[in-house]
Structures are given as C-alpha cells and as structure tokens.
Image 1 (tube, rainbow, N blue to C red):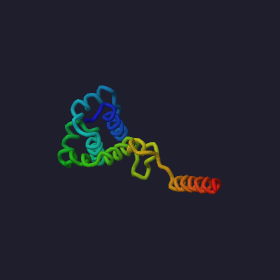
Image 2: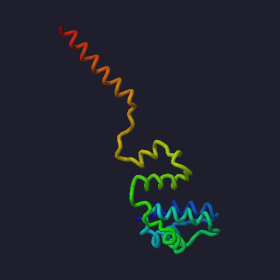
Image 3: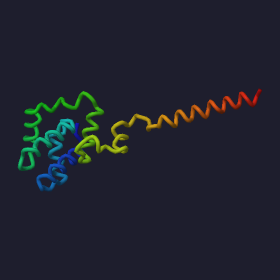
Image 4: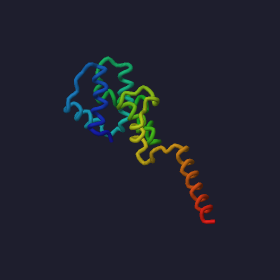
Length: 139
C-alpha cells in the first residue's frame, strides 16, 4: 500500500535525522518489506523511532514499533485525515496551520474552489436589479 516514492519520502526524513544517505536500492528494499503497510502507519513508526532511536531503524524495527504501538488501524477511518497527515509529514509541517491552499487542493480534490459569499450575494442583487429594471422599462 506504500509506494516506492512514499517510502523514499519517509526514508529521506529519517536519513536527514540520522545523517545517513539513502539510495534507490535501500528504498526498494524497505518497500519490499514494508510496502504492505499504509504510508501514515510507516510515517508514524518512523517518527516514533526518530524520537527515541540513535540509529536509522531497520524494517524489522519499524514493524516492531507498528505492532507495539498498534498503529495499523489508526488512519483507516477517514481518508481525508490520512491525506492531511501525509501532506503534513511529506512537507515537514509541524501543525495543520501550515497547510497551504495548494495542499488543500490535494487533500480535497473533488471540492469546488472557494467562492466568497459576498460575490454570490452581489450576483443575486445585480440579477434582481436587472429583472426589476426590465419590468419597469416594459411598463
């Protein structure tokens, strides 16, 4: 369920913390072992390892954290929250307050862009004035 690209993002974040280099072969190896886990389960396991570990965790160590902390079911309930958490992790945000408009388009791809209420009211007012004027002009 985790792609090679997503695994690369997770490994890059850990490699930065542990001052290590990650190459394509390492990313492929981690994906082979851990690819069945959702991306945010792996991201949370990576965060937990970075909080306490001194070395870049091996796939088996990440699996131990996932099982010990019961992370597997944490992000299944709401896909929007999973995507939001992933965007924050991928972009290195420390809180949801840092989410940009572009991020919102990724998180909510099916939503129409925001239209200010004032513009809608103004359009309705202009239309009603046109109708009123048309009625007045025809009398």
